[in-house]
Length: 131
Image (cartoon, rainbow, N blue to C red; front, top):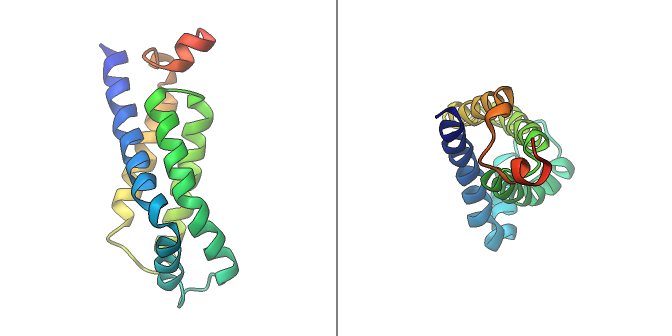
């Protein structure tokens, strides 16, 4: 029972990351332009924002696929939380308070998944690495 609940929670996070990346990848230049515009009045230099804006959709897409598959789960949870922390910092710097709760929820889900990784039995990790 716990393993099925774990799978469902992992899929919730995975679909969200995957979906965010999937819709942004085909319009990567436009997404980058939007993000750099959003941060134009922040204290972050454009030399940091622009590369991050191109890397973010790729990271979201990759983390999403790995979460859905349950592959390299431990490292994927850590990478996902790292992405969320960077997004949260950026959100605070531009005072986009409406986006913060969603980012916190994503981070908390990943932390809970990491905490209970022992029940990650419906996963490629379990099949491949016999964990």
